[in-house]
Each structure stands twice: as C-alpha cells, then as structure tokens.
Length: 293
Image (tube, rainbow, N blue to C red; front, side, top):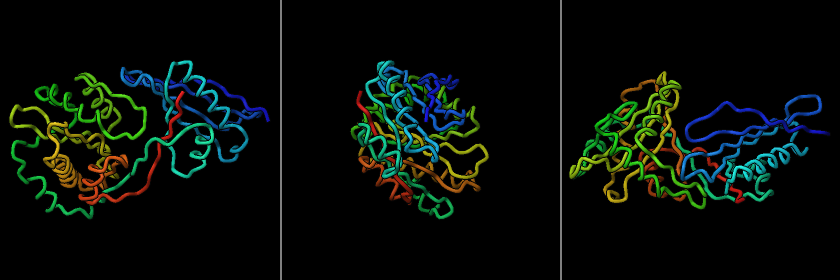
C-alpha cells in the first residue's frame, strides 16, 4: 500500500511557537493519520520541538506512524532542534511506538481533580484567612494591574526550578508584555483568568502566585495554570495559602462550576502534598517521552 505524506500549511502562529503539519493519505485520498510539530521560538526554548502524532485505528501497524514520524524528526533536525518531546498515555500503543523508535521517558505528570460540590468551604476560609506574618494576599481578574505588573513578572521566575525531571524543557523568559499577552489570549478565547498572589510586606514585591482559568460560562471544570513561590519565600506555607484562597473564590463566585483540574510532575512532591491536602483526587497520568537529536 502506497501512503503519501503531504506537508500542510498550518496557520496557527503565536509569539512563542509555530507549527509544521503533515497528512498521511491512502491511495484513495482517504486520510490515515496526521502529525504536528510545534517549534518553540522564544529564547530559552528554541532548541525544542513538541510532537503530536495520530494514526487512524484502522490504519495502525501499516507503517503510517513511522512515515509521519520520519517526516517530523527530519524537519526538527532541519530546524536545528536538540530535542523532540511527546506526551502519551502510559502503556498505550503510542507509548510503545515511540519508545521502540528511540524516545525515552523523561517526565510523569499526575492529573487530579477537586470536586467543588464536596469542598469544605468553612475549612477553605480558615486557611485563606489564617495569618502569614510578613505576607498578605492580593487577587485580580484578567490582566495584571499596572502597579503590580513588574513585580508579578519577576515572580514568574518561581517556575524556573519547577521539577521537570529529565525533560530538556529549557527556560521560559517572561517580560511584562508577554505576561499581558498571555492574559489577553485567554480572554480572546472566551475564558476567565483569575490570579491570587502573596505579597511580601517588607518591600511590596510578589513572593508567589497561583492562576486559575474558568470557562467563560462559569460551568464545567476550571483549570489551574501556574503556581509558584520564589525560593527566598519558600517554607512559609504560601502555596497552600494561595491555592486555598483561589479555590474559595472559585467556589463562591461560580456556583455552577463543577470542579478544578490540575497536573503536577511526580517529582514535585511539595505541590502534590498541597493538592492532596486540599482534597484533589488523582484521575490519571501522562508521560512525556523525549528523543535526543
């Protein structure tokens, strides 16, 4: 069976990445699979590509996946990439397929969900209102207020040493424009961004933050984005404090919201303990596989 691999033009372009795409087609013209290669373009991550490859179940084990992978890896090399990563379900056919072709497991993520209907609102209020000497909580919706923009941007360095195990993920470089752009992107797709931050009373700088993105209609499940505390401010229980306040706000502001979703690297034992303590229940795992070029 002759399978054609057709390069496509992908219009999806952001300030931090662009994508290449391929379609696998049978001789009849029927699509058999596809591959997308996300090329990170920002400094600090421009060595990295992310693969998303799918083969129609009826065409698996017929060489479609291998042809798509060959095209994507060749393009990654041509683009001067050092590493290609892909996220799969552990033990799945995709996992076995990529491992057999040189990919190795570098990271395991545990996904968890908090059912808001079963949350202890009084307990959350107690945590959120508990004193943390030297710190106070602030919160905002959408784009960070101008008076907090610089210090909030600086606080994103809290994510620089986030446990990523062996992933060649690089470093995300933030400036005020990128912070605002990320918030606008969320708003433009119709979702609602809410941020809770801990401010150090000593100098008024943001010591840590947690972000929650809520569907625009306030229903279904919301998604936690980044949560981090700068190294100099760790050990004071700020992550638990901020996250409890974020959950409390979500519970009170969105009565039709069902739950909150989060994912944490298995190596990030501290954040996993915070989530467990707040009642998040693990739902499934995903693994990141990496091919070193």
